[in-house]
Length: 287
Image (tube, rainbow, N blue to C red; front, side, top):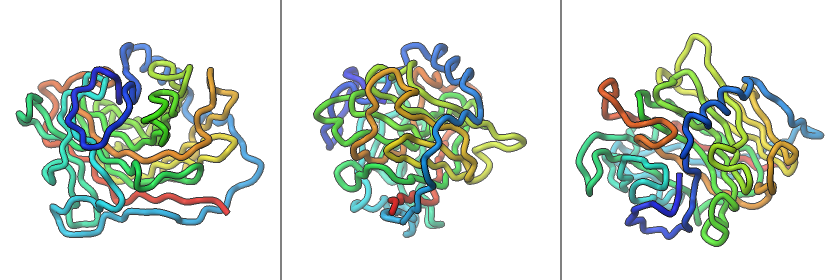
C-alpha cells in the first residue's frame, strides 16, 4: 500500500514506493476473478514439522495498546493507493478489546485533514523471519470501501524499495465482497495489477460474521495459502514473471484501510465504525 505520493508523519522511516498501487483496479479484479479457486501448483518434497517461535494472543485489558515488544505503528495517510484514512496510534483505532482480541477500527471522523481514521501496525525491527507458517484468526469488517489485510513485506524495504523487497498478502479482502479473500505475492516484474495470486470463496457463510483462520506455509520452494486449514492456492519460482523475492526475512503487518483504488470509496451503504478483530497471530519455524 505504498508509493512515493504518500503523505505521512510516520515515526518509522520507510523507503518510497512501498506497496502496490492499484492504478488499474478493474484489471486487477479481473486477474483475481480469473484465478481459479483451489489452484494448487506447488508440492513440497515433504511436509515440514512446525514449531511455534513467535505469537501474540492479544490478552490484556480493554483499551490497552498492542505490545510494544511485538508491534510498531505506521502513522500517516494515503500510502500510495489513494486511501482515505489517517492511520493513528490511538487506542480508538488500535487496542485490545478485553476479550482476548486486537481491534483495529476504522472510524468516520475528521482528523488531520482526513475524513476517516484507522490503524496499521507491523513487526518491522521487532520480529522478522525467513520461511515458516504464518497464521492469524480474524473476524473481518464489511462494507463498500473497507480494505483489511494481513500481510508481509521484506525487511530490506528501506534499502531496495518496493516491489524489489517482495510482498506476501496472506489475506486481503474487499469489504463489499464479504464471502471472498485473496492471497497474492508481489515482486520485481509482477507487482500491482501483475501480482500473482488466487482467491478463496466461502459457501453459505461470510467473513464478517465469525472468525476464520488465514495462513501461509512458506518454504524455500514456494508458498501455500490456507483458509480454515484448507489449502487453496500455491506459487513457486516458476509462476512469477521476474526475480523470486522470497528468500530473506519478512515482517508482518495488520491494517484496515478505507478507500483506495482496489476497493473504491465508501458510499451511503457503508456504516462506521468498522472493526477487524484479531484473536491471535502465530508464527512457526520448521525443524
